[in-house]
Amino acid sequence: MAATKLDGAGAAKMAALEDALGYLQKIHGIVEHWALAMQKKNNTSMFGMQLRRTATPLVGLLKPIYGLLADQVSGMILVATRGGNDAARVRSLREGVGLLRQAIEIQQSKVKAQHSVDIALTDE
Image 1 (cartoon, one colour):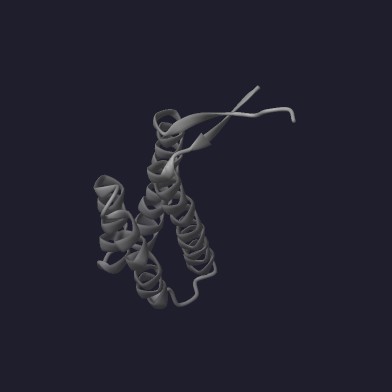
Image 2: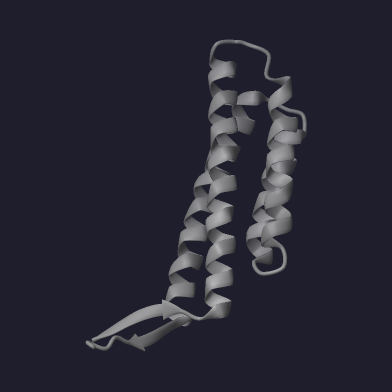
């Protein structure tokens, strides 16, 4: 019998991607709260800075290994903190969250494919 396991580099990359998914979940929550506040006609001025504070560590996490993903997050920060129509910003941020989630999942499958190591299981 044989089982697959990730090598050291693959484990580090996978840990970074799983941490990124945690940050992305927080960002998604902020975007959805922003949409609810906008729908209820509440004050939405705090959400841009809240998203920026949450997303900045994600950029630092992704930049060394996945520069393009970090650039996507930076673009989302720009959308969130610039002025403009709240509806357009929320729509763009929702799209950004979806694209980033998809890109992270693609990277996870690439890491599994590139860094898998077969280990032999013995029956002793």
